[in-house]
Length: 277
Ligand SMILES: [Zn+2]
Image 1: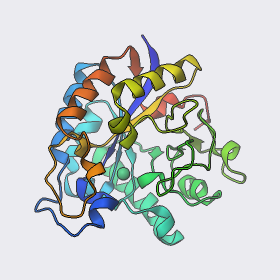
Image 2: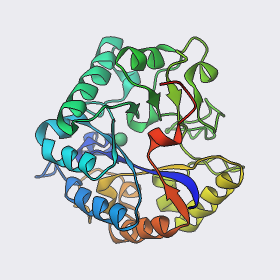
Image 3: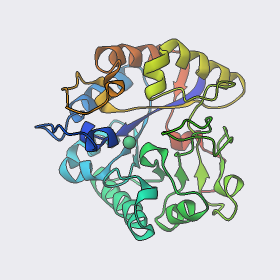
Image 4: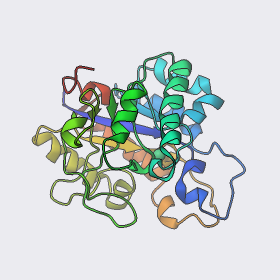
């Protein structure tokens, strides 16, 4: 058995992307991306990999059977909000609503306990409020911290914590009962290993980063999106970088990642022992 790694899925549609929402063009099908979920389940199953699906719960409202299939396949179901809004752009009442409602919906549709949360675009308001709201809504952990360098127009520069930890060790005043599972960044370079950076720098970059982290005793936490595996329709106004290496390239890349000698585990199991929760 190899070193543990987390290859998580942020389950959202192409139409949930901020880059799509801000574009002029519109898709006929708001569900572009969802058709690949069963293919992902198949590939994870073929490699004996467990994953965590951070699900936009609005998808679970429309397709409860899809979320039930993910749980039945043995993967963890976690929350990626209800509407995929940027948390720092809405009121604190709306933030609490996004957290609580999405957890309720996912627990109902998947028939499992939901402990994990990831914020859209890794955007969380600074300070302890986010973690207190997670605690109040019944979550046990967050995976929205990217300890990368500051990337103008994106995120980063706020955190350096690369290992799982209790939230109160990350942010003063945060509840000790909530854990944080930071997303993997390349040691030294301090850029993320997955998402846009995986597609820009290539699979060997991501694999090298995973190995470097494993050598330091850190569980690499990567993420993919279902829409990245689709041959995407062109939408007027969506930047070209969003399309870069989506489709066949990502399908091959998923295989390459799953072939690596890591034990792919759920986010929740990667946090065992960090909190009592
Ligand atoms: Zn997202």
